[in-house]
Amino acid sequence: MHRYRTHTCGELKKTDIGSTTVLSGWIHNRRDHGGVLFIDLRDHYGITQVVIRPDSGFQYDVAHLHKESVVRFEGKVIPRDEDTVNSNMPTGEVEVEATSYEVLSRCDSLPFSVFPEEEAPEETRLKYRYLDLRRSRLHRSIMLRSQIISAIRKKMTELGFNEFQTPILTSSSPEGARDYLVPSRIHPGKFYALPQAPQQFKQLFMIAGFDRYFQIAPCFRDEDARADRSPGEFYQLDIEMSFATQEEIFEVVEAVMSSVFKEFSNWKIEEVPFPRIPYREAMLKYGTDKPDLRNPIEMRDATDIFRGSGFKAFAGAVEKGAVVRAIPVRSISGQPRSFFDRLVEFAQSLGAKGLAYLVFSDSEIKGPIGKFISDDKMGAIRERCAVQSGDVVFFVCDFEAQAARVAGEVRTKIGVDLGLLEQEVFRFCWIVDFPMFEKNPDTGAVEFSHNPFSMPQGGMEALESKDPLEVLAYQYDIVCNGIELSSGAIRNHLPDIMYKAFEIAGYDNSVVADKFPALLNAFHYGAPPHGGIAPGIDRMIMLILGEQNLREVIAFPMNQRAQDLMMNAPSEVSDKQLDELYIKVIPPIE
Image (cartoon, rainbow, N blue to C red):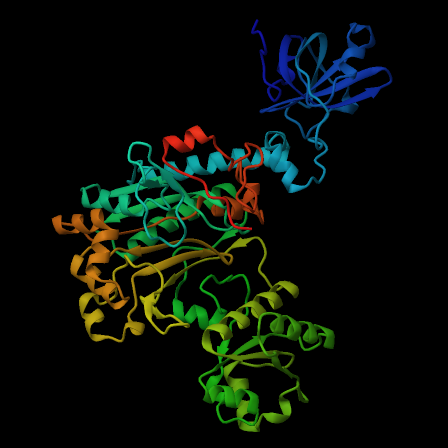
């Protein structure tokens, strides 16, 4: 007989009645019913009820073990009494009558309860993450994460992709965030960097002649935490394809998303092909390039209507270059005045001067700005916003970027507060046609707006003949329920176009050659047209599980200050280690 177990704690059935078994696991719970001690013994696979009679000779000893102690029981499988059968458990028809036991490991007093799963401070949960991971909800989430990643790998292989690994120690690259630097002992004063993404390597795979690459890739960025972004490290489904169009990349990603989300969630999922929304349309309708399409509210441009209107605050701002965004909301005219006051306060908290609105009914039009709007302008608002009786239209006036931000936030708040969001559905969309360049609001200089390695739509001709701010790129984001899962692009694989694009953004050719030598040199040796994307694994799992925080789907996450409280990282190192690396630590100035 096996030293520790003949069965797992989730395995015994009615067919095992009468047999002798050995089980090992954690004491999940215990109950004393009329002198008979019942132990719920838990392992990775489930829970089995163990019965210890008063005449066993060890009931007292087991009763005084702390929960979460690890114990081995040997005994006979017997049927449960009919009135104690638990149909919610795979082992609920049987129990084990213990004949012997052995304590494999005693548990001290717990810093928080594993069962029942009571609330505990997040810092405590992270410090004792190995205990937190014993809790059924988090344990299931991490197991589901493993299954989802396995399903992704299977689907990518079915689609003809091959998984390759890329280096972890590489060179520093001017990506969008700070690098984590690793000092070199062999090359004093020089540093490796942990990859923010395998971007250049996966492109080099394409140039090397491999056709379809993927990797469940670890990425490292020294950036601040958010609910949907883990500090330090994260994983992404890294994809690159040769001789591929933008639509072909979309088809691959849609196939993966549809397959995985349908397999692991019973929510409705957007039918393929997912909607394609141009960037400028998204900013106009939703005020963001990460729209939550569960929210039915769509904004309208009302700048022309307020130009020269009697509402001088808006009319004057429009003459100075401001825009007006209208936010029509259906059938909410019966909301109390406090609802409108709270929305005005919310808009002001975002930096807006205020929030104008009109309330429409069959008999009259109310609202603070109603008396300033002429009949013809009011008719234009009705037509533009398809107004019906009972509707309310809110208005934000500011320069374009600020107007989009405030109006978008107001749209989101209204949708959430009034319960307008469609439930139990994943609404995917693609945001396409990003501008290649944008103007820096502080300096007025032209800069890259998204990804400098993207192919401009129209190629060299567009870069040479168009206003840079009018040049669009083959760049795209995939968004689900207001969460950006990934950015991607058709890559710029032609050196002349790359030099020209960087020149427009203010970079000399020598800077490009110095910062991206491997990729740029490779482009001179026959590079195929290629493109890719890298959806975030952690965010996908967070959506599927309905969690609001990434730390609930990562086994060993850092806290919001990028600290691993369990392993005490980051930590100081010895002077000997620093000397070997030719590094001297200078304390920060207080």
